[in-house]
Image (cartoon, rainbow, N blue to C red; front, side):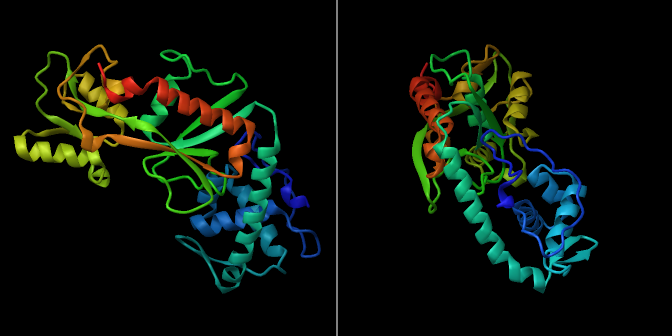
Length: 317
C-alpha cells in the first residue's frame, strides 16, 4: 500500500519531505504519512511540535493534516485554539484506529529491518549524557573493541525515554529496565562516581544540579554534603559537561563518573567510588529489531566495551 512510501526509519534511511501536493479527496487510498502526522499532532498539540518530532517542516505538517481531514470528507478533527490544536470529538473517534495502523506498520518495518543481512547503516541509541560520552570516546582510543566500519552510531541524549516501539530510537541504554513491553533486555554494567576537584585547588564549594533535577541520586547526595558541611553551592547546572568545566576551572568540587574524572590530568579524586550513586545501565531493544544485523552488532559492541572497560568504569586505579 502507498502507506509505506516515504516512511522514515531511524536505522538507516534518509528522511525526505515529499513533494507538494494538494489534499486528496476521500476516494483515494489513505497514506500512512498522513496517519502519522495526525498522531504526532494529537500527541504534541501543535503543528510546530509535530514537525520537530517527525523532522518535517510546519507547512508539510499542515498539508498532510489537511489531506488526512479531507480523506474523511473534510471534517475538522481539531479545534484551532490560540495555544495550539485540541482534538475534538470527531478526531477522538479516530485515535484508536490510527494507533492500530501505526502498530501494524511499525511492526512490519521492524521485521523488514530485522530481515536485512546488510551490516551497514545508522543505529540510533537513546541514552543519558554519561553513557553517550562513554560510547563516543570508545569509537576509537582506549579500547580494542571496534564497531563495524559500515555502521554509523547516532547518540541521542534525551531527558524523556524514547519510545522504542515507535522507532524513536533503535535501542536504549537506561538506568532501569522497563517493567513491561516486548523487549530484549540485558545489563551492560555500572558507572562508578566519586568527588573531584581541580588538582591543588581549595574548591570547597559544590557544583550540583538545579531543582528540576534534584531527584537525581548525585544531586541528593551532594545536597546532604552541603547540609552536613555547611559549604556553599557555587553552581547549579543541568549538564555533566558544565559540572566538569566548573570543577576543571577550580570553581567547585563535584560528582563525576570515574571514567571522566580519573582520566582528566587537571583533576584529583577526593573520595572512593560512592556506592549509593553508582549508575547501572541496561541495554533495551525491541525484540523484533534485535535480529537486525546492524543492531545485533551494536549490542555486541556495547557489551564488549562494558566488559573491557570494567575497571575504568568502576574507578579501579
